[in-house]
Image (cartoon, rainbow over the protein chains, first blue to last red):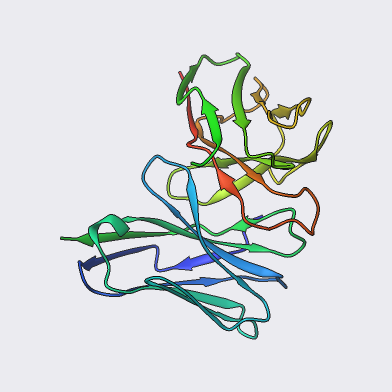
Length: 110
Length: 116
């Protein structure tokens, strides 16, 4: 069952701008992860935020989590053409399974 | 893509045929997963295995079968009972089969299956 929903479905920005993607989910979670998928390839893990954390940074990535609103956001600062990809949020409650959203397609124009 | 390999990269199947997709990992991970991805959509879980000789159905297991005879290998068979098998199939693995293991999954490069 699909739990996460990303917003927007697609995003097109200029190189150097910031990109923000949002994810909403429906049930309790232990943690939320963001993955990137380049066209026709497998997914790559970007960052994990636990349910007791509100914000986490990794390089140009900033993730926030609001468990009261059941939502998360992924901010990519100073975007590059190489950031062009699909981005998925995935939630986990018991650790053994992930539930993925439908993804946001990001296009960074140079 | 890490230490997970999937083969073949592209696979064509005639209607009524069974096909097997290979997934091998050398990461010494306990848990392995199979997902299906349709265009413009997220991943849906087909089957997963947390330990050798054991596996569980995911959300869309009908028409698929798996085996887990070795820790390194988790092949997926798409049977003729799967009515709409054309999709991108992704295999993943995770350290630690139980809830205490890390939740992060590591993905293979995928197999694109097309039914002719």
